[in-house]
Length: 216
Image 1 (tube, rainbow, N blue to C red):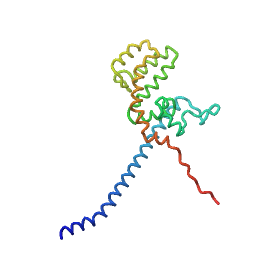
Image 2 (cartoon, rainbow, N blue to C red):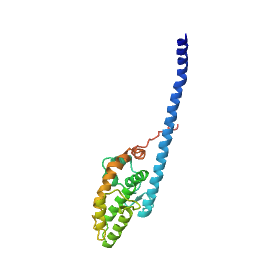
Image 3 (cartoon, one colour):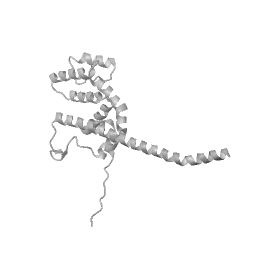
Image 4 (cartoon, rainbow, N blue to C red):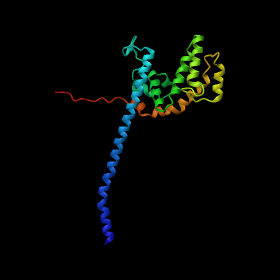
């Protein structure tokens, strides 16, 4: 008799417990959805900051185009262009918008010094004036290379010492070893995570075209 009553209680309790589980799952989905929106909003804020900073420093055109139909360098890429960034790290670095987006991602990982060092080296190698070359080398060293520098990059002792010795008379290859090290860190660690990020995935999605019913 007691066994029969126990089974009856278990039977009566089950329908009540099942909806509760579904409710928890729904709340979990809603929470994850809110988190994704928050992450995307934060990403866009960072990206807008870097885009504005890049615009200010490069004196961009006031309109979205310049010259004979040339696209504005920082305009949002098409999904097809964004997808090409996944083919190779160099494809990402070849895009002005891609570099800015990647920089915003590295900032979220507290490692933006890597892309900033890479960009500084890229500018350094294009410098022709010996006087400017020396000044830029010292600035890069003080900001990224020196021990306890404000944006110290992760390089070994030997590489740092080699740069220190070359600093008085720097050549365009002065930071080459450090640049290769930082490039490798970004390509093998940060770049794959960037491709998996919600922000990058959103750039790759084609916009949904809503079909409005035609009026009669």
